[in-house]
Length: 164
Image (cartoon, rainbow, N blue to C red; front, side, top):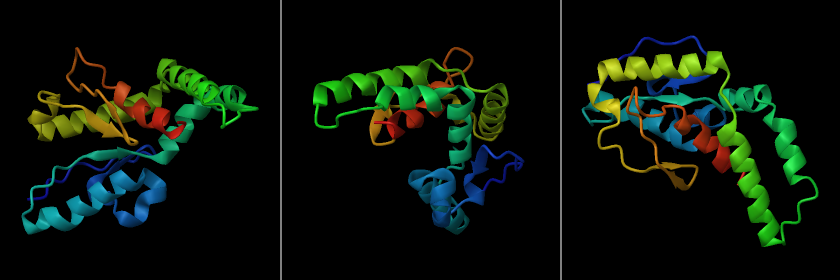
Protein backbone atom coordinates (compact mmCIF):
# COMPACT_ATOMS: atom_id res chain seq x y z
CA UNK A 1 0.00 0.00 0.00
CA UNK A 2 1.38 3.38 -0.99
CA UNK A 3 0.93 6.10 1.61
CA UNK A 4 0.66 9.52 0.03
CA UNK A 5 1.99 12.41 2.01
CA UNK A 6 1.23 16.04 1.25
CA UNK A 7 3.72 17.31 -1.26
CA UNK A 8 5.88 20.18 -0.12
CA UNK A 9 6.75 22.98 -2.44
CA UNK A 10 10.36 23.12 -1.35
CA UNK A 11 13.51 22.97 -3.44
CA UNK A 12 15.10 21.18 -0.48
CA UNK A 13 12.82 18.17 -0.01
CA UNK A 14 11.59 15.50 -2.43
CA UNK A 15 9.33 12.66 -1.33
CA UNK A 16 10.21 9.18 -2.56
CA UNK A 17 6.95 9.07 -4.53
CA UNK A 18 8.23 12.05 -6.55
CA UNK A 19 11.66 10.72 -7.49
CA UNK A 20 13.14 7.87 -9.45
CA UNK A 21 16.38 6.61 -10.88
CA UNK A 22 16.60 9.53 -13.34
CA UNK A 23 16.82 11.96 -10.42
CA UNK A 24 20.38 11.12 -9.33
CA UNK A 25 21.58 14.73 -9.98
CA UNK A 26 18.70 16.05 -7.87
CA UNK A 27 18.90 13.75 -4.82
CA UNK A 28 21.90 11.44 -5.24
CA UNK A 29 22.07 7.79 -6.18
CA UNK A 30 20.87 6.20 -2.94
CA UNK A 31 17.83 8.45 -2.63
CA UNK A 32 16.97 8.10 -6.33
CA UNK A 33 17.10 4.31 -5.91
CA UNK A 34 14.89 4.45 -2.82
CA UNK A 35 12.40 6.62 -4.70
CA UNK A 36 12.42 4.20 -7.63
CA UNK A 37 11.80 1.24 -5.32
CA UNK A 38 9.02 3.07 -3.50
CA UNK A 39 7.29 4.17 -6.70
CA UNK A 40 7.62 0.84 -8.50
CA UNK A 41 7.34 -1.76 -5.74
CA UNK A 42 5.01 -0.29 -3.11
CA UNK A 43 2.00 -0.29 -5.49
CA UNK A 44 2.69 -4.00 -6.12
CA UNK A 45 2.42 -4.80 -2.43
CA UNK A 46 6.10 -4.86 -1.57
CA UNK A 47 6.61 -3.11 1.77
CA UNK A 48 8.89 -0.20 0.99
CA UNK A 49 8.70 2.58 3.58
CA UNK A 50 8.01 6.06 2.32
CA UNK A 51 10.45 8.81 3.06
CA UNK A 52 12.01 11.95 1.73
CA UNK A 53 15.31 13.04 0.28
CA UNK A 54 17.17 16.21 1.06
CA UNK A 55 18.13 17.61 -2.33
CA UNK A 56 21.51 18.52 -3.74
CA UNK A 57 20.23 22.10 -3.89
CA UNK A 58 19.70 21.97 -0.11
CA UNK A 59 23.30 20.82 0.26
CA UNK A 60 24.60 23.65 -1.94
CA UNK A 61 22.40 26.16 -0.10
CA UNK A 62 23.68 24.98 3.30
CA UNK A 63 27.31 25.17 2.17
CA UNK A 64 26.81 28.62 0.63
CA UNK A 65 24.76 30.18 3.45
CA UNK A 66 27.05 28.85 6.18
CA UNK A 67 30.04 30.34 4.35
CA UNK A 68 31.55 26.89 4.04
CA UNK A 69 32.38 27.11 0.34
CA UNK A 70 35.16 29.63 0.97
CA UNK A 71 36.23 27.91 4.19
CA UNK A 72 36.54 24.50 2.49
CA UNK A 73 38.41 25.98 -0.47
CA UNK A 74 40.82 27.59 1.96
CA UNK A 75 41.33 24.31 3.85
CA UNK A 76 42.07 22.27 0.73
CA UNK A 77 44.08 24.83 -1.25
CA UNK A 78 47.56 23.56 -2.04
CA UNK A 79 46.52 20.08 -0.91
CA UNK A 80 49.07 17.40 -1.66
CA UNK A 81 47.01 14.23 -2.07
CA UNK A 82 50.16 12.12 -1.78
CA UNK A 83 50.75 13.30 1.81
CA UNK A 84 48.26 11.09 3.65
CA UNK A 85 48.91 12.66 7.04
CA UNK A 86 48.12 16.12 5.68
CA UNK A 87 45.12 14.74 3.79
CA UNK A 88 43.71 13.28 7.03
CA UNK A 89 44.31 16.53 8.90
CA UNK A 90 42.53 18.61 6.28
CA UNK A 91 39.71 16.08 6.12
CA UNK A 92 39.22 16.51 9.88
CA UNK A 93 39.17 20.29 9.42
CA UNK A 94 36.50 20.06 6.70
CA UNK A 95 34.40 17.66 8.79
CA UNK A 96 34.65 19.95 11.80
CA UNK A 97 33.68 23.02 9.73
CA UNK A 98 30.60 21.26 8.32
CA UNK A 99 29.46 19.65 11.56
CA UNK A 100 29.82 22.87 13.54
CA UNK A 101 27.89 24.99 11.02
CA UNK A 102 24.22 25.77 11.51
CA UNK A 103 21.60 24.99 8.91
CA UNK A 104 19.74 27.98 7.47
CA UNK A 105 16.44 28.43 9.32
CA UNK A 106 14.25 27.80 6.26
CA UNK A 107 16.14 24.60 5.43
CA UNK A 108 15.82 23.40 9.02
CA UNK A 109 12.09 24.18 8.90
CA UNK A 110 11.64 22.27 5.62
CA UNK A 111 13.43 19.20 7.02
CA UNK A 112 11.50 19.38 10.29
CA UNK A 113 8.16 19.70 8.47
CA UNK A 114 8.95 16.70 6.25
CA UNK A 115 10.08 14.64 9.23
CA UNK A 116 6.95 15.60 11.17
CA UNK A 117 4.74 14.57 8.23
CA UNK A 118 6.56 11.26 7.97
CA UNK A 119 6.42 10.66 11.74
CA UNK A 120 2.71 11.46 11.79
CA UNK A 121 2.02 8.79 9.16
CA UNK A 122 4.61 6.31 10.50
CA UNK A 123 4.87 6.61 14.30
CA UNK A 124 7.57 3.93 14.26
CA UNK A 125 9.97 6.44 12.69
CA UNK A 126 10.68 7.98 16.06
CA UNK A 127 14.19 6.55 16.00
CA UNK A 128 13.67 3.56 18.30
CA UNK A 129 15.79 0.74 17.06
CA UNK A 130 17.49 3.13 14.66
CA UNK A 131 20.80 1.37 14.10
CA UNK A 132 23.82 2.95 12.55
CA UNK A 133 22.83 4.16 9.13
CA UNK A 134 24.97 4.48 6.03
CA UNK A 135 25.66 7.98 4.77
CA UNK A 136 27.93 8.49 1.79
CA UNK A 137 29.68 5.16 2.25
CA UNK A 138 30.45 5.77 5.94
CA UNK A 139 28.58 4.80 9.08
CA UNK A 140 27.16 7.59 11.17
CA UNK A 141 24.99 7.26 14.24
CA UNK A 142 21.68 8.84 13.38
CA UNK A 143 19.32 9.12 16.31
CA UNK A 144 16.02 10.52 15.13
CA UNK A 145 14.34 10.47 18.53
CA UNK A 146 12.71 13.76 19.30
CA UNK A 147 12.79 15.93 21.30
CA UNK A 148 15.94 14.54 22.93
CA UNK A 149 17.78 13.49 19.74
CA UNK A 150 19.43 15.76 17.23
CA UNK A 151 17.48 15.41 14.00
CA UNK A 152 19.93 17.73 12.28
CA UNK A 153 23.04 15.59 12.63
CA UNK A 154 21.81 13.40 9.77
CA UNK A 155 21.48 16.04 7.04
CA UNK A 156 25.07 17.16 7.62
CA UNK A 157 26.53 13.64 7.52
CA UNK A 158 26.30 13.36 3.70
CA UNK A 159 27.82 16.84 3.41
CA UNK A 160 30.82 15.63 5.39
CA UNK A 161 31.14 12.45 3.34
CA UNK A 162 31.04 14.42 0.09
CA UNK A 163 34.22 16.28 1.02
CA UNK A 164 36.24 13.21 2.02
